Amino acid sequence: MAAERDLYEILGVSRTASADEIKKAFRKLARKYHPDVNPGNKQAEDRFKEINAAFEVLSDPEKRKLYDELGADALRIGFDPEKARAYRQWRSAQQSGAPQGGFPGFEYGEEFDLGDIFESLFGGVGRARRRGRGPAGAEVSQRAGEDLTLEIEIGLREAVKGGERTIGFRRPGRCERCAGTGVLPGGGRGRTCPTCEGSGQARTSRGPFSFSGTCPTCNGSGKVPNACPKCGGAGTVLEEARITVKVPAGVADGSKIRLAGQGAAGVRGGPPGDLFLVPRIATHPHVRREGHDLYMSLPVTVREALEGGEVRCPTFDGDVTLKIPAGSQSGRKLRLRGLGIPSLKGGPRGDLYVELLIVLPTQLDEAARKAVAELERAYPDDVRAGVRL
Image 1 (tube, rainbow, N blue to C red):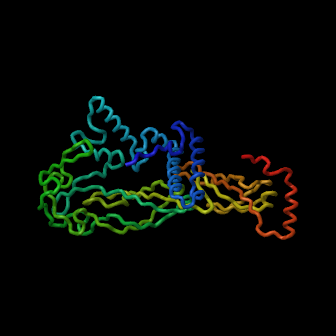
Image 2: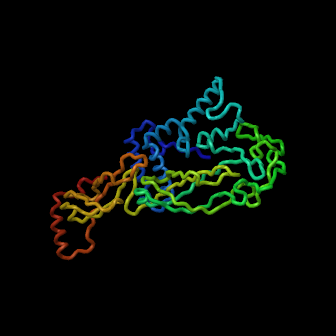
Image 3: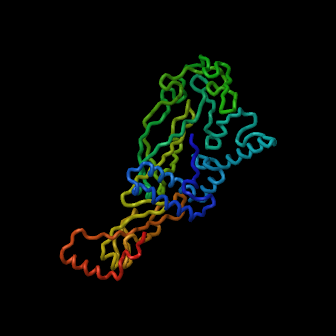
């Protein structure tokens, strides 16, 4: 597996870069790789998403602090920084020869399971494998259902204003025939466990480490009940799910929305996993996003640019009246405070920058041509005098 790229490297800044330096680097790269500038270029589009994801972390002081301390692990779903720090201290003590004790969150004498440690670090505690009782009193091995990830495309308006979205998808659901236990009533415990061959103990290896302990299939009994014929003993069957979710205002491309308990059903009656929605924001024909700010071009006439005045300007919050200063050039930016992207954490909302675009008439009658000739005489100097290559 390829190593994850350093976020500072993605933006081309040092680890000591200031917030302004990070923002400046992001804007420069965003302009270069924006899909509007590179239509149909998949490589540029992927680079643009990578730049946005890096800026989303490094522009947030708390996220940046965690990333600097704990690296790419801090970006993982459900990551618990306190458990990560405790685990590092435990490993450090182990390597130095100091008394080790137990790892925080695990009872002394428990079977040492490396998977349980990483589940603890990444939000798996409380959803680990556990024993339960199926029909006829048979012991069954319960496990939490898998977390699912689903990408959804949303428009920029929906990202700014939020809203509701109904989505359909397929997931492992609870088997109704066996009530999710994987065993039919009267199934008994009549066959030898195929994992441990009846010994009740299993051995497994993870890299250079070898572990032994209670068999996870039969929970040490050496026997397994006869499986439900509909689900094959898993307690789950594939189902069509349809749910309505709320898209929060301010959601960013590639961020994650967690829906607790909407993932795969638990194995043999275990708790369900979570569903993580990953929004992909569609390119808008008139507006582009840079961090929490929005940028759009607004066409104006020659007279409006020369004489100034008030014009209608559309925004995602409705039309507003925009005052154009007299003598405005094409490309001039006018700032509308607080009409950009909302903050998911309750901080100040971004701004909307309106770039003026002077539009010339396409059809000129004789009177218009004379007016243009008069206008030409208003230029005191060569407008290209300062252009040198």
